[in-house]
Image 1 (tube, one colour):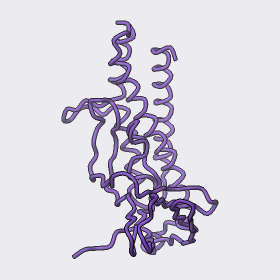
Image 2 (cartoon, helix red, strand yellow; image 1 turned 120 degrees about the vertical axis):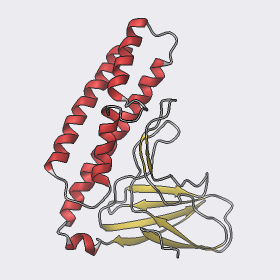
Image 3 (cartoon, one colour; image 1 turned 45 degrees about the vertical axis):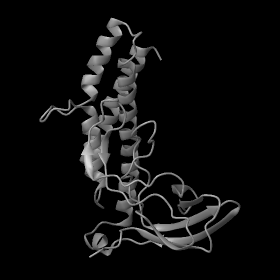
Image 4 (cartoon, rainbow, N blue to C red; image 1 turned 135 degrees about the horizontal axis):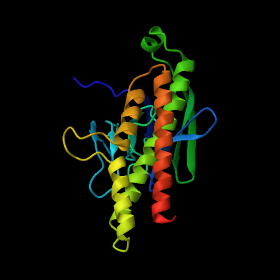
Length: 248
C-alpha cells in the first residue's frame, strides 16, 4: 500500500513542456519566501539517519528524511508535496540548506509558480493537526516552538561552519606550530571523535538539542531554552577563540 506524503499537496498543470525551467516558491502570510523549488538540478531524497561531519570537514549533524525537491516540467498534470518545513541548517559550502528544517506554523501561505515571464500565485491554508490541539498544544505554543527551532537551526549552522573553518585551517601548510596546537585543542572541544561511545562534544550537543525540539509539535520547556542559551554562549566563545588563533 502506498500512503500519500505528509504535507501540502500542490497540483499544477502544464499544457506543454516549457523551454525554461520552472520554479515554485512557498510564501508566508507576509509574502516572504519560505522555500524555493525548481525543475533544474538533481532530485534529493536525504536518508533518515544522524551522521557526524565527514573527514573533509564539512557538513554534519542531523539528516532527516525529505520529500522530493525537484519539480517535474513535462506536459500534463503534476502533484508536488511541500513537507511544511523551512530550510534546514547549513551543512557544507555546496549544501547551504540541509533537510529537516523547522515545521511551518498553521496559517495562511501561498504558492507562486514561475516559468520564464509567466507566473501565477495561489493562496492556501495550513491547518493545525486536531490530534495536536486535542493534546493541549495551542497555536501560540507552536509559534513559540517555531521561533525556538529557528534560533537553534542557526546555532547548528554556526557550529557546522565553525567546524568547517577549523578543519580547513588544520589543513593549511603555512600555519605555525603554536597555532596548530591551539587549533587541535579547539577541534577536540567541538568535534566528537568517530569512535563508539566517545564523549560528545559541542557540535553533537547542539545537534541533539535541534532534534529534541524539532521532531514533534510540542510546547517548548524552560530547560530547552536554558540549554540553547548555554550552548549559544559556549559556541560564541569558541568562535572568538578561532578568530584569535587565525588573527581574523
